Image (cartoon, rainbow, N blue to C red; front, side, top):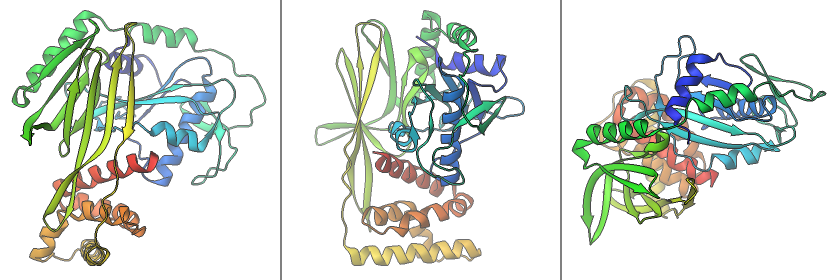
Length: 377
């Protein structure tokens, strides 16, 4: 089993960007340009390295390989995006890898690309790239190219060596467990061993509501691979496990005018097998709550007025200072109730919310995470 933290270290230490490896400071698939560039790189790496895994490491400075991290990204439906835009799409996974020196809310993103036989191409137009385009890697660049020759396999031995040197061992596993337990002392950390091999650690603030147990500020890691499975500062989570599986149900709090309720968002089940393998199954549970349209029109217009004030640098009134705390969530509720322009307004608000207050900006990022899950599902 590959220790993903070691794998990232090996990639950064021994390789410049090439036909099987790329690194990014960040990616943004919430916006059309960022989504198009991400698809281009997936396409190019799949075509340029047809016999092996390729990798994209996200959260790294390009000049000096400094690991700066990115926000936790838990979109298990990202394969749906790949399938929608690429012909002969590769199989990809996005994993969140914690590093001890990073803040608790930051990870390094690791995209693994497993190519299919044949050439991968864009299925339809996106941003400035045309449907039918084929991309390959030339050094550190992903370039459009007419495919007219067979791609030579020049990376198998190199990739195999990198992955071999990243294999997990008992020392790495024990160190990972001790690190987790020590760093989460204030959040009642726990661990469980599955199938005498896999170790899952989790921590969170526990509360019991009507005989149901929920956790907030939750962190869950699969220690063997050094992969963070779940992280959230805001949402509530229920956790269940037996000897063969670990189940997470995530809930989000939504409401208007002080009347809030928790709604189930997604169920994730990790099933551990006897042959030292596991699989993760996810199911979207969310059903958008419907609210009174007159009330929503009032809130939507108020949000727009606040956004205009932020754009012009005007001071907010006392009521607007209160309302802006809920602006991302109420824009999201409007969008889920068929106010189609609300998503554009929420995206437009990003830089102004970021400049206004870190707490409001965190709420914005959480709302975009939820909307991304819903759209790709």
